[in-house]
Every structure is written in C-alpha cells, then in structure tokens.
Amino acid sequence: MTQAPEVPARSRAQISDRTFRKDPWWQAPRITATLLTIWVLYATVRVFTGHWYFVAKDHYLTPFYSPCVSGECVPGSSSLGQWWPAVPPVIPYAIVALVFVLGFRTTCYYYRRAYYRAFWRSPAACAVREPHAKYTGETRFPLIGQNLHRYFFYAALLIGILLTYDAAQGFRGPDGNFGIGIGSLVLLANVIFIWGYTLGCHSCRHITAGRLKNFSKHPFRYWLWTK
Image (cartoon, rainbow, N blue to C red; front, side, top):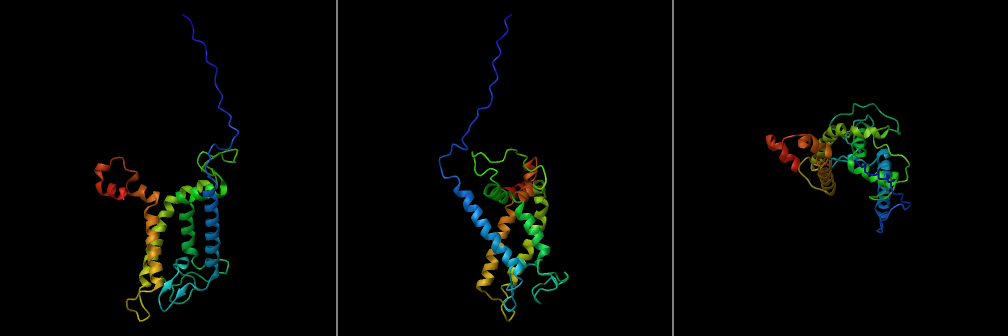
C-alpha cells in the first residue's frame, strides 16, 4: 500500500501593507476623537465649575448636578436633601451619581468601540492592522473592569428616574402651577434621550430576554427584547 506524500505546511501569508482599503477610513476615528475630546473638556469644566446649575424660580437643575445632595448645593436644588458632607472644590457636587454615570458610559459597548478606535487604535477601523504587537482583549487590568457594565446598568436606571423627576419639576412655573419654558423642553429632551440610550443598552436586552433559551415560554419578555 503506497503512502500519500505529505503536503508541506504553508505558513501564513506575510502582508507588509497596513491595509488594502482605498477609502478614507481614517476620517471616522479622527472625527470621533475630536468630538469626544471637546465633549470631555466641556463636561469637565461644567462639573467642576460649581455655579449656574440651578434656576430656583423655574426649578431647572442641570443633569450634571443631579442629585445635588452636597452640603454646598444651593438650597432647594435637591428634593433628596443635602446629606452629603461639604466637599472641597476638586470634588464635584454630584459625585454620588457621577461615579455611576461614568461607570455606565465608559463601559458601554458603543463607547468602547468609539475610544478603542479613536484613541487606542485597537483597531482604528475594520480590515486595518492595529499598531499593538500583542492583543490581550479585555482579560487583564484595567480592561477587565469593562465587565462591570451590566452592574452599572442598574445604577443607570435609578439615575434615569431621578432625571425624569427633575424634568417634571422643570414644568412647574414660578407660581407653582404648570409652565413650559425652553429649559423644561431641554430637560425633557435630555431625559428622552437618556432613557433611549439606557433601555437600548445591550445589558438591558440581555436582562429582559437575551439570556433565555426558549422564547415561546416567555412571550412578554420576548416582546420586550424585540423592541
């Protein structure tokens, strides 16, 4: 019986080019990096300013300071009281909520894609070689912390409820009756976008029905999942 000759193993093709893409693939990460940088700078200034965050007569409270439970908050700016001790200027008034807001946003799948491509170039775009020599994914510190996203989701729900209450308060006029202003409409639009972002999150879809093995036995949860 003759033995079939062995076929020599082929090594992986060595491609020296970074990519074969001909389109301007670098534009999207550059735009994302620019917009994210502008947004982070603006948000940082607003959070640490400590002024111009509450309009008492119209009951407008900026989301950056909600809930304003610090002892240094303007009286009347919080319906939850001001039980948090006075903090030094380097700590935002709304530090209680900001920790969870940042935790939820920075670990979100959408934000990960944005800053992975824009700042870490990992990768910069599809079918483009990344500059890193070794890939470890999200298995080591600090990126392993991205797995906390599903837990930050529950805190995001509570924050969404607080912002909804703040938006409702914005429709109280100076005399306490119903009133509409530009500020109240801005707060309403903000809370609509917040809920759309939060409830459209992958963690929300996973909790509602994404982990089910049989959709037919859970029709309501399946309906929520499809929405």
